Length: 288
Image (cartoon, rainbow, N blue to C red; front, side, top):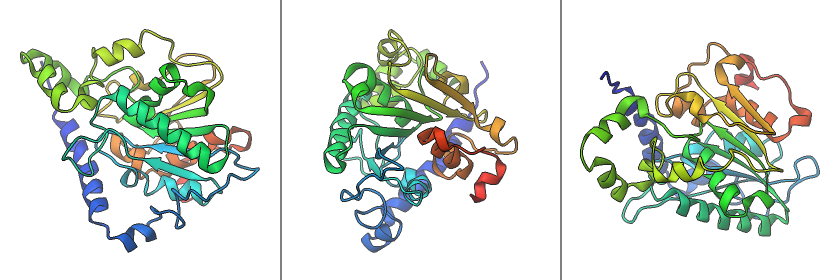
């Protein structure tokens, strides 16, 4: 069996981003737009007629509510959206690196957060945008926790909707007796995403989509974390599956970059949020 160790290397940018975020002082965080009144997570923000729904950003595994969104949150805020982001899936004693708790429990946290945003903004529904686990976990909220009545759209950036082999590492884990159970006891948010998990069996027992919610999936063929990348695609009505390289053939973003720094993706997210005013996403969107 041939294994690739490249997935481990893809985690390094995420770790670097998280460490940089953790090192920010309060003034620096405010300058970056991470505090109320200076950018996103401004609970005094009221949605406009042009953008009547707040956007809730859901970070990926090992991310948090600001390091994952240092590009996309200001991008959307500058275009007139009320933008919010939450931390979820925290483990006791583990700072900064979130999304490690049981995914079903994280979906409950998302449910409470969406209610908080709706109460603050007066909006009936929100639009959700998530990266990696954050693009897939909201489906549990929509399917099992009543979220379908509170959400207009879900846009997943490299979401792990149907499980990952992690370029063969899941196969290796299953060849080591007790490894999956041991790892799941420490970081269930990781093993819940592995192909064959009980969590995924429950998710795959129901249709990919729920009526009344519009879905967009943006994937990259260079994804080394969600493998194969097509496992992120959804089936059903009101679904649009997008391959990044069909928008910009020379875009080399892999799993981390597609959700954290890629402005071509940011443009396509804006299109997903407001399809009636969508404009073509191309390589030139990086300067848009």
